[in-house]
Image (cartoon, rainbow, N blue to C red; front, side, top):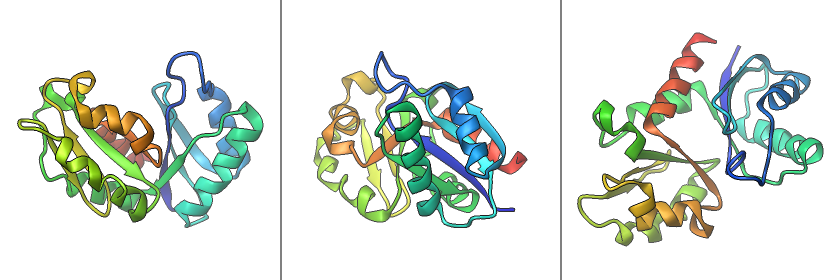
Length: 179
């Protein structure tokens, strides 16, 4: 059965946009997903489903998250093959000690990622941003809070994408393989 990961943008950060992970897991199961497992408290889950369209899953999940929790947020769904390609396509694999300073931006489609191209000039060495058709990769060695690109991704310029640090991306990839 096809496997997927779902990523919610900006939930459970501060007091707003609260989505309890137990409720999120139940929501996915009630939508027909099986083998549902969540990761952390930030809107990450993996699941199996007979449905093959990540975009359709994203629409259905977004509608239910809004209906059940009153949270309107971008929902990104990637197949196991797409996640594997994003992991394998990383143009600058960081050492393990730097995983928290390396972000991957996910968009539901190539247009969402292409909208990040204006951020490229904001990256000043040794910071580096690479935007591809599958994902965008940001290395910010001084930390996310010191990064102009990072601030833009978390703000309006990144409103169509969601980011995860490299450690979380690798965990999700491993979880997809185990489903």
